[in-house]
Length: 235
Image 1: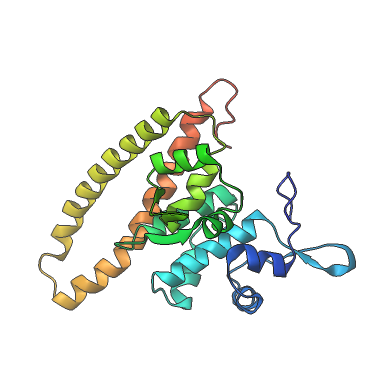
Image 2: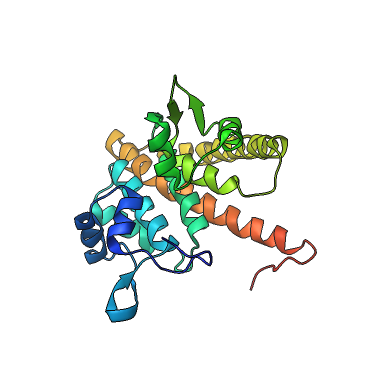
């Protein structure tokens, strides 16, 4: 398990089980430098925490999107080294959005396993309002894997359904406007290029632009929240 303080307390077996992968996979990723080293506990037993779990989930999502190990290494090297589990979950949600259709149908038990916690009727109602899950028959749910972890984290945020939906509308509106403006900007760059060059540029631009937008948004939001009474601001 993980302590309330979020300190590393998972064994490698528990980390693998929580992430839905094998211990061999965890060791493989660690050997490639895709996961930070564990914290050594008593008797030098490696312990893992929320950052390891979130980073492992991000690596798995990048794999699902078809990125090679070399491409995943490049992607992770470009991330700030001090990202929190929440920051990593945001990146994973954005990466999952690259897929045209990421919705899966799972049982209640599997949904709760992936969420890492029991889900009561109110929890399911909130996740449904955020379009993260939906009923798909008796004891079956449609779930967006890329948004599930973020949606579960929002369950503990003291916001009403209305505020969550309003926030989602704001994000959709402004992200579409940014995508439109960037598409127009890059369209001029590829107008006179060969088809192969255009395809190569498109393959590289999607993850890079998404990552740049997410990083810029995180910094802007941190600055805005820092202006609230009691806000920490930026260093």
